[in-house]
Length: 269
Image 1 (cartoon, one colour):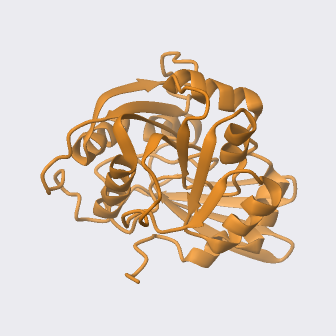
Image 2 (image 1 turned 180 degrees about the vertical axis):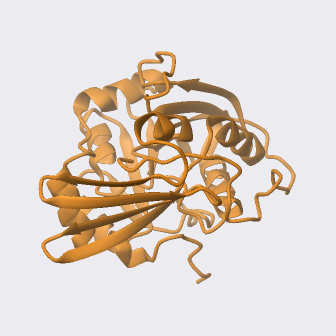
């Protein structure tokens, strides 16, 4: 198996992360959210959907409960086991999405990537590889939706590059810092005498659109929510796209570097 091309060791999303997530309770998917995703992507009943970076399976599980044929993929065996325990119904797989999907997985009518579950590659090239995996997993004309914090939201909510933020929520202390040279957000979660650090690369919306085009997506639209409202600076970014022609090999300028050309900070994913 090839080396994992991830900013974080696989075990960072382990038991400590699971307990921290339960304390914070920020990533609870609802039936209403799943229905909004289905409406946004105009999915037919029984559509095959890949939840890419599914984490604890909350979105995959919510989609399955409203009749979607959902598959969840994540790099962490621990969170996949938690997904199978707490959100049964979808098919779950442990897989590194910088690599092509295993034989027999897909094709899908749609790929869903929510809760800022993107930007974990060691380099921008690795993040691009993830997008290419998603594109290859789609049927012709298949749809993609991404929902994440972009740098515009980071600046609106946290402050300029280099800002350090410390905050407490339900017994969890968070220490946030974004490196202005790499646009990589460092978040250290501490509670009960334990801590874990998670790294995420943040992007400007325009940079993400360029990467999506490079990966073979077309008809890219951007919104401030699943309801298609215009994006305000403090809104999370929602991007939709359609599987287009695969592009020749090559990268946007600077994509071989771990640094992104953008600025900002955000820590609530």
